[in-house]
Length: 276
Image (cartoon, rainbow, N blue to C red; front, side, top):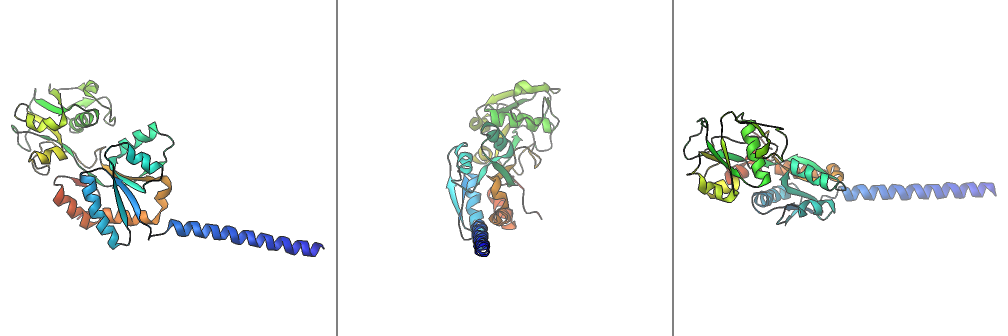
């Protein structure tokens, strides 16, 4: 009788082992399913335009991408955390960190850097290479994100000092030293290009600069560079960092073909991928 019980137990254990092995295999197979399209969230504008190009490149590599546009800056991370999309491309790392601080249940990660669409300093009175004179009137955006970014840009070039050069919440009140006695004038971002005649120079982001006929590659007197806090990223769920499709996606985004596309479409942008 004991012999039969022993045989039965061995058989049961073997069946359980096969069952668990089968489950593990199915999970890995599903994880590595390159035929399953991935959904990437973007905002309208440069991110959406670039992602359409990445989609074409990725398809040649065997990865299918579906693009989903979001009109705000909150939903893309909420949708990513909920698993409604596979990745998103619309934000810089400080924004992602601020989101996760506010929503600690979000398990999101920076997958890789993409590009920087810089906020630069432009002028009609000065030429590239000129020094901004003492007492200059400098217009910056009056919204917290771009205003702080403009002040940090001036600080990064040693034109003034702030409490914390890494603090994206920096405001005019956080300027600790202004040795050149600059007059910082806060204006609506969209209106700043029209104010260039009335100020010495102004901080203008790439989109508004292009719309105003400015060339971000050649016209700025002060440029935001690749070490900026505001380099854009692709964000994913932490678990997705091990997804083999992510490497294909990264190779497509950071390819020479995409680099040339971005350079042509968005002059002056700083590309964090393929290099000569």
